[in-house]
Length: 132
Image 1: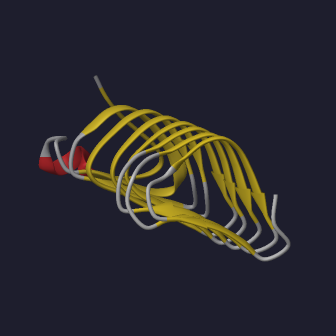
Image 2: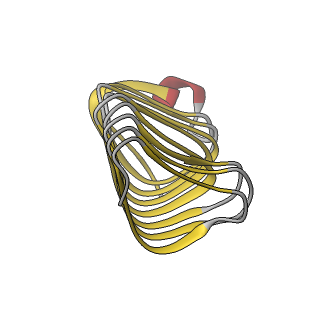
């Protein structure tokens, strides 16, 4: 627990709570992580995360809540944010104003949803998009 930030070079396992952010330079962040600004690493984030502004990692898995946005290569689980960006794949349920992924295996709910692996007529859809 830290007033400003929990910062580590090799990742974390357990419970991390910070006034601003939970940041791992390298290595995974696993467990329960909460930062009023962000939860981020260059590697994987697994467990339950809350990021006031953003959640960022290579692969984000579990229950992920960000007031602002999520920026990942791969998302798995329940992802809620204003903007969800899973560049390579998104599995599970994603709820946001704008959901964006190249490969959807699940459901997107939002004002605008993009699933790059859907046929061109179904790639961009309002309210709900799905691919299984």
